[in-house]
Every structure is written in C-alpha cells, then in structure tokens.
Amino acid sequence: MAPPKANFRVPLPDGSILSVSVFPTKKDPKAEVIAIQIGRRVEEEWENLQIMAIYRSPEGDYVKLPDRQEQQ
Image (cartoon, rainbow, N blue to C red; front, side, top):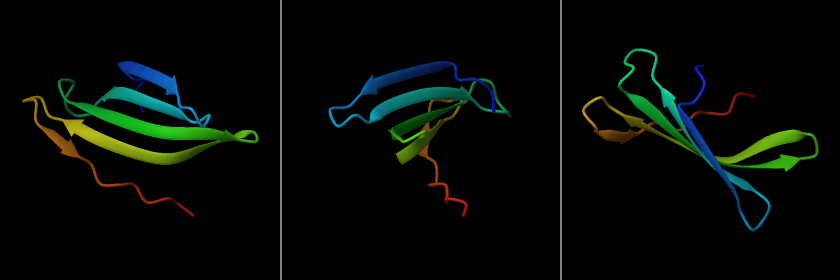
C-alpha cells in the first residue's frame, strides 16, 4: 500500500486514538480513499476498534466502502 497523502491523529479522552488518513488509489491518482480509524494499544499490540473507508472519485463523488471482514 502506498503511503498516505495526509495523516491526522488525535487522542480521545478514553486513551484511544482517532486517525484520518488519505490514500491515493492504485488505478487513478486523482481518486482517493479516506480511512477513519479508532484504535488503542493493548499491551504491545495495536487494536482497531472501528474502521470506516470512503472512496472519493476523480469527479468528487463519495461512497462508503464495504466493511472489511476480519481474517481469522
């Protein structure tokens, strides 16, 4: 995965982290995926509590991407 074009993080009152990242898409450099995550440290591991991804087309349309299924 390419590095994000932009990345913003803010701590939440419960110690979790809210992050927003903007990634270029593989097929069209004018399109982007916006990833919004809430995560926290659990011992030495990072745990994602919630993730939402939004696709922005080159024309400026926005669509929420389907949730990813956790691999077991």
